[in-house]
Amino acid sequence: MLENFSFRTIIEYLPLLGEGFVATLWLSIVSFAGALAVGIILCAMNLQHSQVLKLPAKMYIDAIRATPLLAQLYFLYFGLPRLGMVLPELFVGILALSLNSGAYIAEIIRAGILSISRGQVEAGVASGMTYAQRMRLVILPQAIRVTIPPLLGQAIVLVKDSALLSLISVSELTRAGQLLASDRFMPAEGFITTAACYLLLYYGLKSLAVLSARWLGVRPIGSRI
Amino acid sequence: MIEFRGVNKWFGALHVLKDITLSVEPREVVVVCGPSGSGKSTLIRCINGLETIKDGRLVVDGQRLGDRATNMTELRTEIGFVFQSFNLYPHKTALENVTLAPIHVRKIQRTEAESAGREMLAKVGLAEKFNAYPAELSGGQQQRVAIARCLCMRPKIMLFDEPTSALDPEMISEVLDVMVGVAEEGMTMMVVTHEMGFARKVAQRVVFMDEGAVVETGTPEEFFSDPKTDRSRAFLSKILRH
Ligand SMILES: Nc1ncnc2c1ncn2[C@@H]1O[C@H](COP(=O)(O)OP(=O)(O)O)[C@@H](O)[C@H]1O
Ligand SMILES: [Mg+2]
Image (cartoon, rainbow over all chains, first blue to last red; front, top):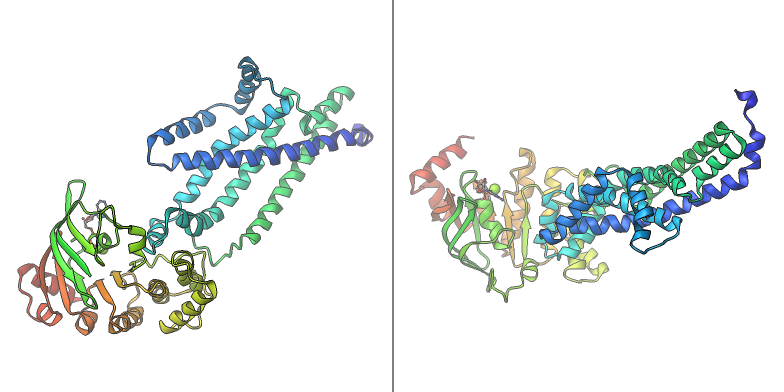
């Protein structure tokens, strides 16, 4: 097999693969930022006592978790034009990833906030802090620390999920691999190269986690939570 | 300073506080004791609004709780609360723990708050531990930081909910010594504790609670040597046996 493996073709397609890599990278970043925004809003709704906000958030989160991302992607891709909204594929793709990951992120943040003990809230209340001060000074700094590893896991899932965007012909990494595979009938070259690129992104995210932990000042002893 | 009049509270069907009438004068130290589940924690948690009352009158520092005109957040800055489980902020150093509320709630300058915080930590015997995180401190040290955290707000009232119950025996006295010091400086205090030595030393009154009601009140001397009711006698014989 290896003697047939054509590095020459890979090199020939490197510019296209490079473009795909960059596209996957930035559309993942944009989608993750969108997902964080969606997640924070959903989580804030879900933490309210009033059912008016809580119930829609819960239903949304359940709907997203119960259905495949591909179905959600097609739902937007074919559904939005029917509502008169014709949007570029790339935009639809980013929207789908943000809306999908946002539901998971909402649950990650909620778990982080709920993991902070009742006593922490009470200590803040007893010292005269307002709800906003408690959140900002006591709860969120602790919640963020426990939230980073699962958020990073979700970022990795999002990067891999972005491969589905190739199905609505967004030019990204998997799409570039597909082109190589079908133009030259070289699926091995195409898909092994894309896989290697995803691996690279994975390690990138992992080192980001280490850096962010250092930046947030997570100390092994200081955080007993 | 603190006045309960005919206060009742329920948790669902459970009548936790039954017609409580009790007052604490400025600079007075009152010890509350009684069996587990008798409503002691609930009683003092009502004072700073961690629990709300159903009916009756509760006036703290001249303000009636539950009144529209009463700003609970503001009132709480005047009341220190020491928890059984310390509840220090684990992501903050000892110094940050004691300066957080002064800076953000009292709006004191950071440098000023920090020098006051250092002074207070030194006073409770933790001059070496300014930069230690709670997890690096023993239980007794953590509770002393928690007391310093309250004192840094310059409160008018200090409430303690079994401050030494979660501590190893050898650490109890270091915390009680700090509390005695606070009492001797004239703080108004309400302390839920079974530490008789502390009560005899600084309390003007002991309040004995059972099943949500105040059953007996007296000076420490009267209460410990000559309890008036069967229930307080039974309770005292139990804690004395240990
Ligand atoms: N948040 C709550 N919800 C329901 N019941 C409670 C709650 N807090 C306390 N209780 C009950 O109220 C009673 C009094 O509790 P507490 O004030 O903690 O007693 P103590 O401090 O004297 O041990 C207990 O029976 C306890 O189980
Ligand atoms: Mg209690």
